[in-house]
Image (cartoon, rainbow, N blue to C red):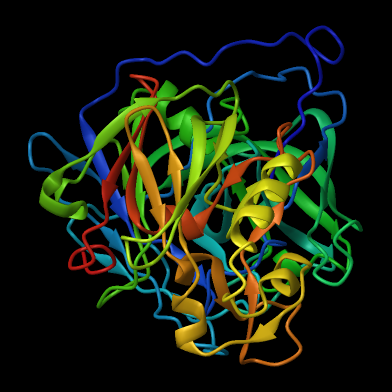
Length: 460
């Protein structure tokens, strides 16, 4: 999801997010990931947010944060949020999150198929109540289901926000909001989905960190075609850095360091781990992380110089495609979205190999049946950054489980034309990220990539 901010001077002044020095605290969590596959290019849609009379319009940092405990340099205890395994149709379950720092764990459950949402709980109000929220690293708002919401899901673990039941709640200017999205309707990608409601200021805690004052949206209406929010009725964004951004508010209050990291791998306890406030060396192979410059402004991005296609055997032919674009890093996008010119070049280079079964059909957005031998014959894809390569095998971009597939055993191409999404149409999503422990060092304005340690990610 991507929030389109108004230009400076149109709806308000733009400002940069400051990076205050925080306590050396680290929070770890395993996010709720709901899917049996990472496929779904429709998941992380281009987001068009109409934020009525927004006077903040901050030009902030692209921040993902969901943590469920606290760890400091002085060895404060850590609470870890565990995520369910990949179980289709598993009923959701939840436990109330007491704000403890005694190493307690919070189990997750459920399956939202096929939207593959990452979600966690946030504590809102006085007294605090748990609200499940989708993690959206492409926007900067906290929006939760409001009491009497039309169209919001009500089954557990969902909750409904009642501002009259919170002694710390007060109305917030401009009092109303309306957030609209595209590619949120899985059957009609160009259709618009909307959530709208009223704005309030209230006390918010995350991972036992807080509370701090955050401006939040209480959703009063959600359109029926909003497939992404049919089971989890809320969203927490981390990219704008304003008063609506929970993580940025915690950082500004000096409650955590301005760095977070994430890995996505199915472990013994969960499907991934997010580190808030530092870097956990256990989550990358040998504790090694290589860094490149964060070239984004508003959205965290890395400069991709070229892409290379190499036969799976390693000794075969290779083809290099020039890119020269900044790729936005969006944990809410499941697949790789590429600019049209890059898509055309990739298709042309890949499908020159006549031995690849169904290549042209796949690139024409058809889903086809393939044997594992057919899949493994497709080339590896490497994104060449400045001094660092991001590697994907054919199993990372030929994927089962797409809503476009007519049968469950059909593979679909997990590389899609990004159009104008995020500006360039170039978005690096989960199918690339899941091979790495990804570090967002906001203070140093750099992005770290370490080979994911599959023995520890999802098992902490």
